Length: 610
Image (cartoon, rainbow, N blue to C red):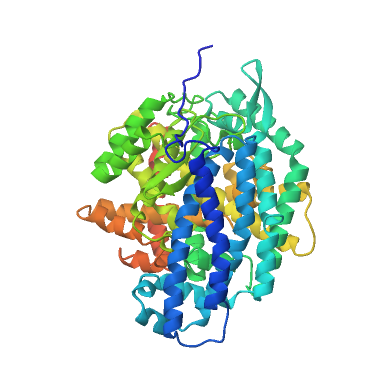
């Protein structure tokens, strides 16, 4: 057996020499000290809820001082947190990094309490008089007006302080349990007659193997591993959903989705329009799954066939797509990004040259993929590269996040805080750039394989995300009266998958433990719909680019630089998009509809588009 290709680990010594270095110790100590120093300043300036009224000169002065301090603190914290995360996300056994991260979480409690006071105070001031009196306030207008709404949903200062103090031992503690347990999880699986013990991320990557026996063996081994861990993971999910539900009720929100809408910069009308269009599209996706089953020579897909490679028309069991070596992936992304703009190409070249990407799956490393901003326009990307076309697509996606960070470089930290809905826009756009450029010159099996990779993503983000949305709604409903058992979580997961995938998948071979797999369920807010928004909004913007490319990159960069300065509907209007109109979402889904039509034609032996 040949040695596996070496894959890059990210370079972090350019940030600080090491966890033990004097440079990191000084930055870490300064960040904690700056948090501690804020509280007496808040007290002296009266930064807490007060009787509503106009902003007096003293208020304007206080706003400019406090906002400046917060922006500087958040900038410094971003670097410190990213450095620690670079270790904790790639080695769950790194005790030094875990200890430092724990110390920082203790300081975060104080910062959370001060942030709550800042929001309450801003919400008490008349926004118009404050904005008129201060250029800093005018720049931060969106933050000020959003604070007025958030303040109406705050508990008392004492209750908010207690909630923040309990967070590390409550919701955040449960989330760390999930992260660390799953990062260290290993699975015993037999692959082509050889018994192996692999990290969970590597076992899940076998879902892209061309051999169905390998895929099924990995699927069964994975389910067995999740079953063995279901008790602590169910306790974690119960703890998180219980915390979320109690806090949102105390804050006066009407349901469990409501708290997320403002933070995601959308409204009910936008969510309803998008989801109704998605539900209308589900028959299209089932047609895709049925066509894929024919291509693989199957009567119906099982869960473990969803990511199977397909390149062979007219059935026959499929032919494996070739694996792409890492240098090929780098070259592909750089080339395709360069077809859009020099600036995007330069970002990719910098990421590879400066070692921004950690690509190797290994024990102790978290699964999935993410991008984190580090400093200025610099980022780090984590992924688990397996050589598949889907993995190459993931690389383009995560570098899209890095490009978004680049466009936020000049903004103060409070204006860099992009909601998940808009945070997925650049990543989707960059994925589509890479896909379209590759598709233009592909034919036959290669074209079919590219369509398949893109449709896998679309299926996950439109259909699977909606199944998880339904699941989470039901969990919140039941969690109102009691904790759920692991079996109940699995039953709800299966019910949600049957409701969305329907006849597209074998109902007896679904994935009951997706509630354990996805770390997003263990985060602070309702997880699902922002990814669907990001995909479809990104596709809609990409369609605008294809229709009229002249001047588009500059306009798009401006939008990305303002994602912390306006809501989604406002930003979309600059491109003549109405996010509250289902017609926009249907138009984005039409792009996917056309891909499904071509995919089905190719599977049936059609020529497809040249």
